[in-house]
Image (cartoon, rainbow, N blue to C red):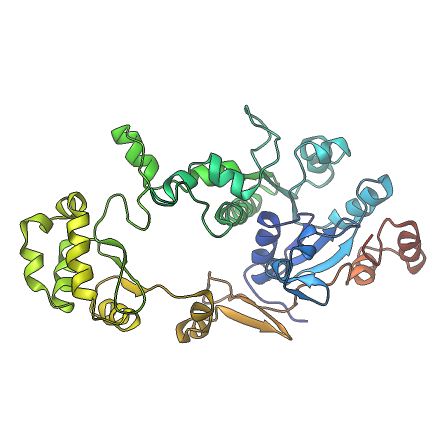
Length: 397
């Protein structure tokens, strides 16, 4: 199979499970890296996070693990760790999200072992809280970090209270940060010839997402209030009722506000002293909502959303997941991809000369065991022995 992409030729050993690490590995694979997913004998637990399932594997797993070949290793046994070391020979990146201290306990710590044995290796760890600090080495989970990082405290309304964002935003941001860290380490290696340790912690990612609430707090000392769909600094910037579905308006300046008012038939409102500037509109946001929703009461949400954005007013109807995935622009942008009977979300980063490619569907458990081990120099007899001993099993334990 001919492999293209910006990362073609890069070899990644992905020991990670669940979300942040596998998401990072999938991004690397989409852009050409050879990614070998190494699962424990019991498998990545997200294989069971369903329904829905396909051939016994949950859709959740499928969404994070394409463009990878898969084997299973019992790294709790010394023989399994010896297999891993052979896989790491010639690898560029080790990606893992074990509990901090696990690899060190196994004699595979970066500073103690891997850096000296594989000086060009980039070791990226995805962790909950990082290795040090008051919460260092504790396990982390997306929803817990949404809570502790302040995200839930600014999401929701006074009626709902603090509310979890409806997707694993911290895990996914951490996966992206892991990829960014790996890319920077590759640049550094290109200049120095040496790899390095990269840490991407869920806690750090959660806190880093707190814009504009953090800068607002730094300047004012005031705690953000729950504002539902409203933006704390801008108005009109919220969801507004129409005759059919809600439309979201994101009006960032006076010119856009004037165009909005003209397009929905209330041009005089742009001259109302209560709404003259953004600061005025924020102070009087409740009164502005009444005026806007009265004007939108006979409008179709989908139609007015498209008409407004084509007129230069940031706006769009609130769509369901299915509507978003089936939208003609989603299709045009290649954001739904297919490999055989697998369908997944496309890569959002689109380098013109080295685009992403979708070569392998999400793997079955240990699907590529024999090929991966042979490429690492194992004989047929060794491969058979690894299966018989359970070190590199063929079926889920």
